[in-house]
Length: 270
Image (cartoon, rainbow, N blue to C red; front, side):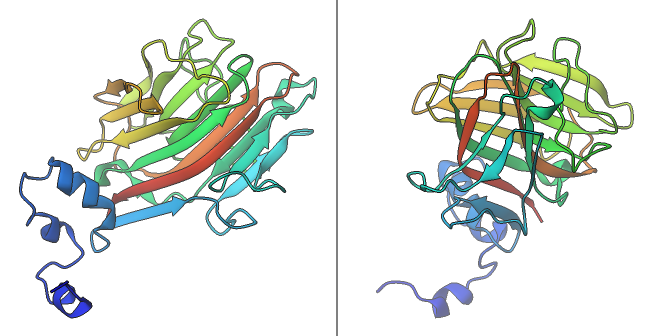
């Protein structure tokens, strides 16, 4: 006989991590990690598949520079639901920036994580950052989050960051995990994600996971069912700080680049 709400609701720890403990294999088992997002009692998660005709501005904020196009659901919906943004052709670099960010309601100490499935129209003259930050001085104005990845520098006023970053104009012109930790934890670090460069017009999955100890950060990139490219930083971010999910794109030159996001997800323990 199949289960029912009556049986499920009567289960000790129903819908929580204690419920997951009843599955064999321990907390690192395939079954428990797969079911983790559904443990609603103990897990805070947000998932956006961009299936409706407008972006969810109750969660997301998006801003674009002069001539750039802010994130929005396209007039002709993308397959499976998407949002797109474009960097534009303005001659001033600061105007070719577009941001998308959520509320500062996550913490590294609670195992915050974020995954975005996206594609870029070209893999030249493009810069993007995605992951978590606390804030920066002009959060409502789109600015590049990591002005220099070779010697990591960050937007003014930022205290904590855990980002997958790519800037094709830098010496390190492939993807890297870039971190900043307040309280003298980490003055700024970069760890190359192999020599990863996105394939144009091909979806990739980029994930930033902060360790349950709050400080370790792991970045992962994968195209399709190909191999994962991984980088980690043991003392990456101060885990007690409230942080927000964020995606920022920028055109390195005045040749516009379009970025498409298929889904975005963020989570942490309650």
